[in-house]
Image (cartoon, rainbow, N blue to C red; front, side, top):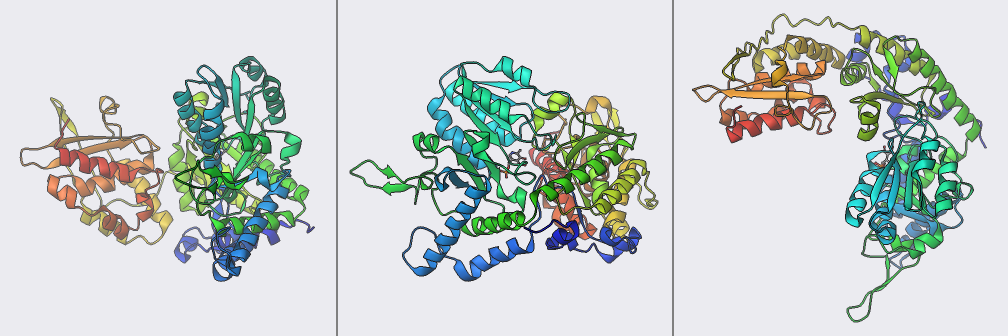
Amino acid sequence: MKNFKAKKFREQFPLLYRQRSSTEIHEHKLSDQGENKSLVYFDNAATTQRPCCVIERYQFFYQELNANVHRSSHSLSAKATSAFEQARQCVTDFIHAKSIKEVIWTKGATESINLIANTLGEQILSPNDEIIITVSEHHANIVPWQLLAKRTGSLIKVLTLEKDGRIDISAFERLINEKTKIICCSHVSNVIGKVNPIDVVIAKARDVGAISIIDGAQAVAHFTIDVQALDCDFYLFSAHKMYGSTGVGVLYGKQHLLESMPPYQAGGEMIKTVSFNQPTTFNVLPFKFEAGTPNIAGIVAFSQAIKFMSQFNQKEIIQYEHQLTRYCYQALTKIPQVKFIVQGLPDIPVIAFIINGHHNHDIASTLDSFGIAIRSGHHCAMPLMEYLNISGCLRVSMAAYNTIEEVDYFIDCLTKAINQEGTASVSNISTNINAETNKGQLTAEINSSVATIMAQFSAIKSWDARHREIMMLGKTLNRLDKYARNDQSLISGCESLAWLVVSKNKKGLYFFQADSDAKIIRGLLVIVLAAFNDKTAKQIQMFDIQSYFEQLGLMQHLSPSRGNGVLAIVDKIKCLAMSGKVE
Ligand code: PLP
């Protein structure tokens, strides 16, 4: 077993050495700051980066081993099948399962949960039976149970948290009873980063004869898992959160439960015999739950990720991650505007907080302009946000390849983002959109145009300077009156709040006025409105927003991810113009 050396470990991850452009480096005077020329990747709870050996194994599979598994008798298929089943053995050993029969390949944690809900869930639940889930679960561990509850007439009971973010065991004791049939709980929440007392949960579930399901998506990358010692009924996770491939997941289940469950999806390889004259019979475990061609290359590469991790002293990795967590947490406590969403130091390097007086989205996008990737929003845990009475938060999530220097750089940039007033010049752009209300009619005086915005942005070379320009533009957008920011004008599809109102003049020209609670979105709105205001419905339909944003060097803001929702805003503008609806 190798000793863990943070620097050597990091060197295995090529994406972390992707250089930022020379203009960005120049802009931030990074030349003498070594590491900060590279990406600072603090979004590991969403997905980790992959080491060279995993990338190479993936490529090797396609170059040397590619064939379908379990189906053909030729030697290439035999080799592929052997690599595929060795990967299953590798996972079996990694989680200390009794047998490979208990390890089912899925697409990810989400599919693993859906598999249980749609098979065992359907089988065991009757009307008024109860499912306990915690308020801090990822949507993947909520929505399948909500759908199941609706289908079966069963009820969902929600377990609350202690002040430190761990589940409240005394509340759990009050909630669990003989009607409880299923208990689902994350080993570690993807937002809070605290280890839940799942041993107590599993033991109590066993006492009342309920099935225990542990979502280990955030746990597997950070500590060793022994499913036999835990004695849970099911344990599940995704490969991509522990240096493996996307589209690969694991469902561990106790053999007797898996045997008693009906199949999930139907198709090739999950059957023993198929006939139109006899009942179709199903394959043995684990194949009964693996219909269709799996992600063979991804699974083979995943076993390489496990081997890669297993060669290091696990205790040293855990210690190093704790050191990073503590260092970052303590540095954040020194920033007066930082407010942690729960009390106390997290157990894994996942730290969630808000910044008083700033929108999460503004902070995250400013950090992005400094080359730091963190996540903002609800983190697929909307019920948790509601419970904590926040609309979203920022999340820093680190891995063993992150460094103390990166944390220092992050804290430095976060401090700048908090204090930033912006210095970019917008002198030659006047986007004075004056909305006046006259019996509900809005008129707008638009001085900015696509041409002026294009001219302004063409002079800017670096990503962070463009970011500052957008922030400055945001300041020029007239805020919508309070009354106009309502449910009707709210645009769905944005993680920040954004509102849009429209009017049309006698010549058939449209005028849009918009607003957002995030500064960055207000800036982007100025850019978007310049393209669509004072235009006919036809011109609005014809306008090519992709090429406009491409020319501005702002394609990142047109991402179909829900991050900022510019596409949702553009869709709403086009939709309103098409329908001719004017409020
Ligand atoms: N459960 C938890 C705790 C997670 O953090 C995630 C993803 O972030 C999931 C489930 C869903 O994982 P996947 O999208 O890989 O299926």
